[in-house]
Picture 1 (cartoon, rainbow, N blue to C red):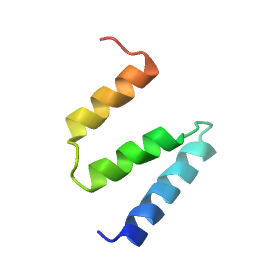
Picture 2 (spheres, rainbow, N blue to C red):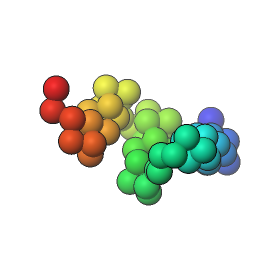
Picture 3 (cartoon, rainbow, N blue to C red):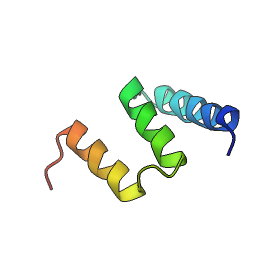
Picture 4 (spheres, rainbow, N blue to C red):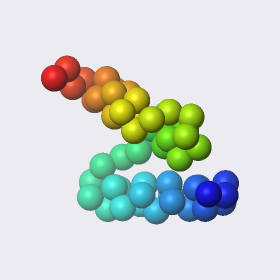
Length: 57
């Protein structure tokens, strides 16, 4: 996936979430970039998101 495609995907996903009333910060977008670049796994991404959200279970 090219950098341009990746940014378009992130922008589209952000827009979709914002339409549902959620917000996406820059840290989360960076984690998405790392996931799409295969620098972190989906499991790592989910763990980061859970910590950020305060989910302990």
